[in-house]
Length: 414
Image (cartoon, rainbow, N blue to C red):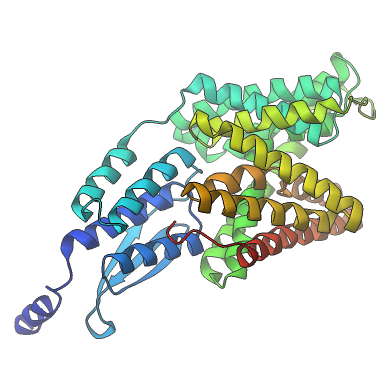
């Protein structure tokens, strides 16, 4: 037995250890930045190819399998990982390291060192900035959801409160385990109280805007993309996680509304007041500012976020007028995907840096909350219709992104 083990070791000695270590570190770091399975495997495959490694990769939201060497004498590694938030700042820095190693400007050992430094670096923005970003994102989302001035004020305040709760969740594991339903409960409870005590407003819009950052619309879209690219295990796992988050948020909203009505009474049903057209323009300037902080991107990316956000918003609006709201998402995703690929090619940057902020304005997360809320209120037909609409929009987004990749030249590495 010992003789066979030694023979295997000699047969795998030709695999460069420093290159393998670099690929392992790169895979873990990219996963921590929020890379989807198909993109992660593609990047690792290209990086290994540039280093002359024969390798295969298999990624899921909670693990990465990496094998090196010929199929009859592979050395296999397992990395246990956790689903992570998008970190476009570190992603951009990792991209530069990956390109330098691929071009021979940096050795794999130096690349591993740089990755370790980047992974250990603290978050770009402090807690105050992050909390403020929660409020700005909620305020901008209120306008996109059709809210008036009262709803915008209420949604912004609720977003700030949820931002404070998010800070506590990072410190205390007990809060983190029930963060989404607890945040939804608090938002719904306070929105109900505001609708009764302060003035007439749309409680549902204010509530949804307050928790919009927590809604897993982007996760749902990524899961659909993974399923469409035949990464079935990763897509199914991510889809299940999104569905459980939807359930937790819907439960919290339903409980918060019920308890709020027991405390404050029934809020009046009102239609939001109209807001001038410039309200959308202002929201399209505020939302990318919030995304810059929440996605941990560099401040110099803000103008590009405004550009892709405006393209996503107006392209989807024009598409909705021409083809209906569901297929309008296809037009918006197609436009954002093309622009992101062109910018990535011209600027030699990762396309995800431009793509994610634009897609965030298109994801159907709010529709999923409406669907589950209707089902919990025993409005079965309305809930199923809304759920089907959410699925159609998600499929339209994925189709638009895949079509954009087919129509535009993509950057070769990352």
